[in-house]
Amino acid sequence: LSEHLLRSGYSQAGLSLLMSITDDSGAYLKARTIAAQHKIVNRQYSDALEILASTEKISESGNLLKQLTAESLYNLSRYAEAAEAAEQDLEKNPYHHRSGFFLSASLLNIHRSNRAKISENEQKIRSGLNEYLKLNERDGEPYLHLADLDHLLGNDENIYDLICKART
Image 1: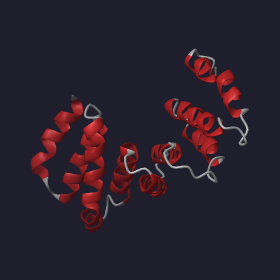
Image 2: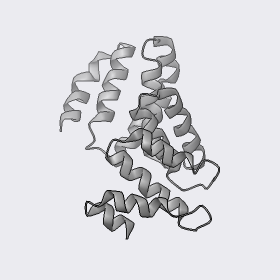
Image 3: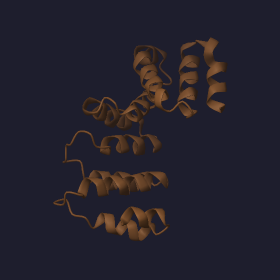
Image 4: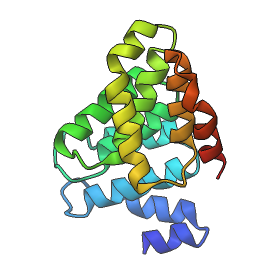
């Protein structure tokens, strides 16, 4: 019902219903996940983090909570925290390629002014972006991050192709 309310434009009613589910309910994690996803879609990243904070003590692998945390932190430009949340998610869920994307993009932003650190983390950054692109080749942002990585490392030969791929 709550998901239907959210999709139908009754977001306040849907969120109220989701947030009324208590932590002793089997639907608690799913409710918090849906509520956080709704906040992220609406670019309310701080609100999403508040929702996700209530789930921190629950450690279940396979859920999206850490990935959603990494996404919210990344979009708030809190790159070090985003990288940490993404790494924690990838430890339990190595196939969460979106967390790999947020880890890579966060590391790129953290070390932007330090070429030695970029070189040191190049493989991790490149790998995370490429894994994400295998499933999301139409998403332009990873191509732009790869172009940025190549630029920062002085590898200008692929930049034009990467930017063209980002546009399509």
